[in-house]
Length: 397
Image (cartoon, rainbow, N blue to C red):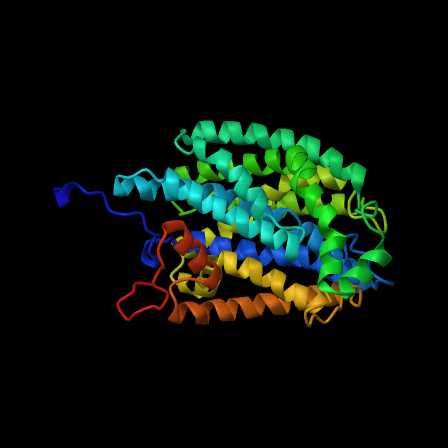
């Protein structure tokens, strides 16, 4: 066989090929998800604070306005962008990336199922994997069509989901607070069984009625944005500045006003549901624009290296957050069982400590290793061979 006609084998993208801005945005999104998720870990499904202080009220408002739905929206956009980037890599090699992508996504689905049922009932990996199987087939569309279709899916999901959220408000119908706290502080099996029905509902009813539309729309929009060059700073500076200004002048004040309509003790109101969900991706793009401008227009872009390192280990860091929170807030298997012991402020500060630890540990880890532990496993299974883990002196960063 003529070796000159052989196509190069599929392999992971090398660190030197990655855009600093995309990695930094991904790291930013992973870290920003934690202040929302840790409320459920630390205070239970209904996020009930015991005798909240004024500081607790302020912290909860900050999470509502600046964090809730914003960072998960960024991550959904980036997941879609990643599909296009993988396809481009396959095209450069002259190969079809379909088999690799489907295998990669099936492995992600498996990781997500283990994560959801044993660690964190609010897992997003299963949702991304399921929607990712369908979104992949749109990858070759022009960015304008992706934007149009994605916008339509998002709009439908926004209308329907906001209504559902406003009707629900909390999860008290699934398990009482007393029962949840007792199970969470008890043994491993008790805690898993206490949350199992919530996981099933999230991965069936909630997925069909909400996540499939909302996140699929954002994924397609993310595909459009990466094709247009948004994430790599290829668009006009005024566009990024416009998104930043819109987020600061319009989105944040509007969400703040909507937050004030949430009744005491409730998770959301009708006004908050509609306003926050539609403006969250816009504000998220404003956050991303700040990072993009620093990475592509600023001479000190390397200051964001810890954020980029966190993004390059996104799966590891996402799973690490769950493991850390399970250890801190749940009982069983040596866990501390601190659920319900802290209000919003205490839980938020614990989350901030985990974020700092992840920035430091990710940076140090990638000085010695090419991938995070979860990324190494994921890639090795995807490509059917053990990936080299140690970073040699010749390995590009």
